[in-house]
Image (cartoon, rainbow, N blue to C red; front, side, top):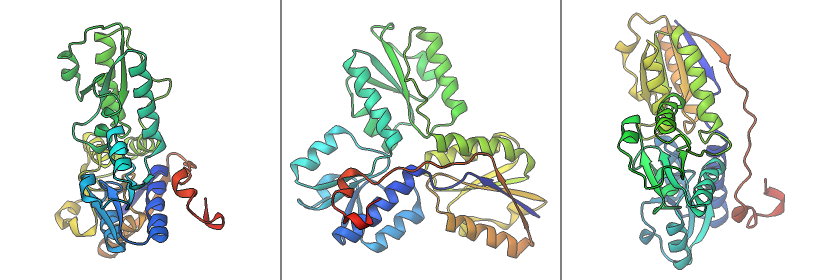
Length: 315
């Protein structure tokens, strides 16, 4: 058996920044440090931080006044920021800069009088935060069928934005429907879907057809990981989204000569290596690693955190 190992895979720059922000916050403040929603959508990452003393909350009422609070990589609405200020919380903003870009675009379009169509998944943390930037000016769509049902007062003053972790192909279908219905629709000068999401999807598209089985490391609530498994499955091989070794099933490997392995942008590399080692030990598999894109993106720690840290350990 051969393992076809995809690159790039796993942590993106935004996830690295968010995880390091929480690590540094725990070092500086001690435990507990409260986190609004999961720091990233990955079971292993969340459980590891719980053991270190991070407390993940869904409402700020769960956070004692004056406590340290970290915003997750998915971003938060202005209403959450205002509530944190009112409760005198020591907020550290670990929002991915690519999500912040979408928030700023939403504010700009709203201020210019546009109705904003956000393409995304209802209930996703990132979507909730983005829609909070201009709730009276924004509508959410997920499919081309949703676009057909849209009723907008001024079709000459419409703009669209996208959730950063969508399938590029799925988003393009919805965008095409929007352009057909609203020919004058405006869009941001640069694609909102993040570089890491696009790169991991491209690797799956290029490599999955050479595999009998595709394993995507990531959690079920990770949008970008789900998209990788969906894309792989659409190309022919059997595809499974798993958190780790414990979820693998022996019958998946019946008749399999090549298994491709990749990981969503919030999946830790050590979990990927555990899966590789298990397959090697069980099936005497060899590894062929393939690079589709090089990634050299780095995001600095949030300014609010850098200002707290000693100069010698800032980055």
